[in-house]
Every structure is written in C-alpha cells, then in structure tokens.
Length: 377
Image 1 (cartoon, one colour):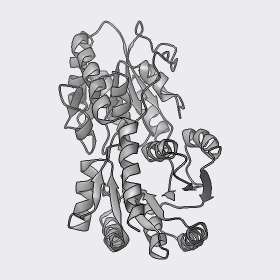
Image 2 (image 1 turned 135 degrees about the vertical axis):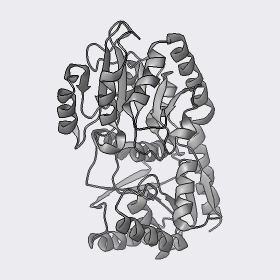
Image 3 (image 1 turned 180 degrees about the vertical axis):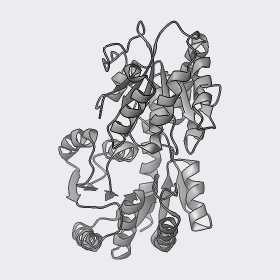
C-alpha cells in the first residue's frame, strides 16, 4: 500500500514512477491519496493509473494538519489491510508516513516511511515544529525502514530524531529518459533559439519556490551581455500569482515575465528554455534540476537542500548561496555571455543524469528494499 496526503509536485512524480516502474506481475498496489489539492498533472495521471490491472486507487479526505477524520481514515485502512492481506505499507510525506506507521502497528504489515519535504524543513512556527518533531519521534518506534530522496533529507530527519536510525537508505529520485527528438513546445510563441534568451522556473507559485527573487533579478541583468531580450517564464499555478504579477508591474518588467499556470507537458516547454532556474527557499530534492539536466540544459539554482547533491557548481550549473537578486544576476549573466560554457554545462549535466538520476536505478533500489522487507516477515 502506498499512502500520500497531497499528491502534487515532486511527491506525485515519485509515487507515479514507483507505480509504473514496479513489475506488474509481482505487485498488487493499493494507492491511497487525498481528494484535496490535486494538481492538473495528477488528474491526468490518475486516469492512466486506474487502468492498470494491478492497482487499486483509493480516494479519501486527508487534510494536511491533524484532525478527527484521521482516526476514521486510519481505521478504514486498517480494515482494508487486514482484509486484503497487505504486507507492506509505504507512507510518503508527514501525513502519509503517520498513516502508514499507525496502520502497520495495528496489522501484520511492515512499514516504510519517506519523509520528503514537510517533516524536515521546519516550515511551521517553533511551537508547531516542536509538536511535529515529537510526533515523528513517537512514530519512529513503529517504523521498519526509512527511504530518503537525498542525504539532506536524511540528515535533517536524523536531527529531528536526535539519532541516526539503523535501517535506512538514501535513494535519489530519478526520472525516465526524455523522448528523443521531441520538438520544443510553444509556451510563449517566442520561446525559440532565435527569439529571446529564456529563463524558466517550473514549480508552484509560492514563496518557497523563489519566483519573487527572479522577478527582482530581471532588471539587474546586464544589457551588454546578450543582444537578445531576456524573458522569464513561470510554469505552474499557485496562490502567489497575483502578487508576482503586481511585483512585475511595479518593477516595469511585466512584458518580460510570462505566466502559464499548470502545465502538463513540462518537457516540451523546458526544451525551449535557455537556462532553467531554481531560486528555491528550500528543496528536499529538486526534481526540476534533474529534468533540466536530462535535457542538456544548464541550471542556476539556490545552494539549498538536495539541490547541492544534484548540481555540481561550475560543472553542470551554478549554485547561488545568497537570496540577493544581484548574485543571481551575476550567475545568469555569466552563462548568457558564454554560450560555450553554458553548452558544456548542459552536456555535463546530461552525463550526470545518466549516471545517478535515472528512473530505472531508483525503481530497482525500491524493488530490492520492498522484497527484502517482505521476505523478513
């Protein structure tokens, strides 16, 4: 059984890769996900997932914070686990992980927990962070195995536990190879090699993804670096769109900032970008950086979280340690001024993707972990 609270963004990509990648003849998968906050890509994916003969999709209302409905949901999943003889429960994210370990405690199933981002970022206030940390330490007693997407997530989680566990694996997320020769998309009708220099940010429009920093960077880019206009493309919907549009107008760059909302065909849009930018406040992994590297795109990213394990500074891209737009401007200017350097970083990024971040490598490690736990029952 795979359990997730909000099936959006990177956690959705990860789960759907597992479902599609595990041998269909060997696994019957119960996929439990929340009816709340489903993104456009999830709604498209779930139609295909429901067609898989080895998958049972189960929708329940799972809210982000604790509420009384959690008890009803857990009781339902306990009954289902016993009735179906489910032997392994894998929870993703803080809420999915809590469900998985509580279900396992009341059944004979083994439990696996993948924290992803929410449990490790200290993203709430000090009181809430302290409460959630205490809950994590309590639930850890019922955890049979931990799977982390990055060394950053593992270290941050160990700090919450106040000790490293014995049974865990850092298994970097991976993506399927891009379609060979697929054409560039047409996100702005101008995103071509002959048009502007295109900076692309792919992610939900919210403070954590740092779109504000990049809008503030646009006016600081040197006009003598490139003869082309520099345009910022923001792919993704989210609560901060109106504020970001207002900021662009206030800085006089509204004509150079394009908004597209939720996008299904990320790969085709990303092919049209000159540089992929990740000015995130925090990232437990950083799927977008891997997707860019798989397409041979240079990356400019914040020096935070899992991004430090993906991007090799000066080799596959550039890392920016500061939130200062002037630092981002310097990094972007250096790549726009030296196409040979940018192209070389793209090639090195592709080689790094092939070595470390393929979907097949990720799935094989998960498959081995699942089989090992099931054989120990």
